[in-house]
Image (cartoon, rainbow, N blue to C red; front, side, top):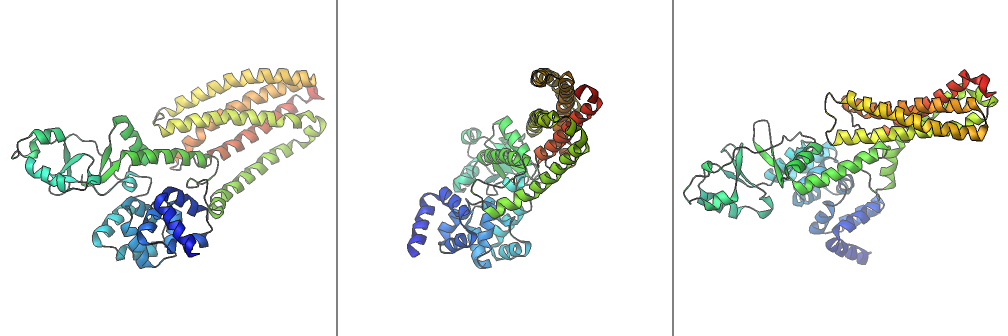
Length: 431
């Protein structure tokens, strides 16, 4: 057993990312045992690369003193993400044991959700006071940690962001020149509450390496680095994709079975309920299906095409929301466009489907019924595929959260009801 623990420590040292993924696949008891056997340096390297909820679970198996030591040695942003997953009493106990400066920094980060600028920012940032001379500013820069230098931010004495300083201007200035004359006052900053997708958009548009984060008073709180923002943007896209189909946004390929079950099972129950709703619609037309059994054969064709049409609209609207293409006042325009396109596509698909059904059944009535149902269902699918994410956003909910499940319910119910309803109207042509 000792040999296994030693070997795993070497694994973490050489390949920390792969080691973290391996730990996430282990049973919780085994993962906790391995984690407890690691020295602080190795444990910290592993913690920073684990999923936050998994890292929090491992820290819950340690004492408050050990937990504080490990989080104190960790990257502040990673530590704050882990703290979000600890119970409130445990979190407070850990923060109280940390040095005052570290505790204050982590409290500031934990105060903001992980998906905001405040949750993404790096608090270690070098800022120069505006009342320095060029010579003093250069001396201050030399003392600053390299990892804290992004742009040369300049602040007032009270910590408010005054502007940014060009390294070229600073080096060309006379040693006694005050840097106040060199500061560029126009600098783009973001509030700590700004959603991370907006931060990513702004950084991509301007091509900045970092963005300063300031509070309501203009005080410099930290910076969001471009690589962190880019990574956050990728995570956001993958999380939205997972949420659309009812999976958890924080799931990974090697997440524990317990996590997978907890994230997916509630939405599977919702999906089961909606499936019964669609089945109830079919049950209302049981007599018609008994008389014309071909209707049962063609039901999946109608609902399937509606589902495809709705998914196309859903994907476009989700992209529009993510990239800020859909802004207030454009929702109706998007809805009209999707409905018009769905009607044209619906008619085109209905003609082909009707012809195929006529060749199969030699029934004009059956071909007419499926044509009408196809147009109605594809149009309804496009409308709801557009409206569902817009409605969720208007209600303050995540527009990606299981939108596909709600859309499938609509297309199944509308498809079955329209197909069997038209069959009832044209019954004399079918029998």
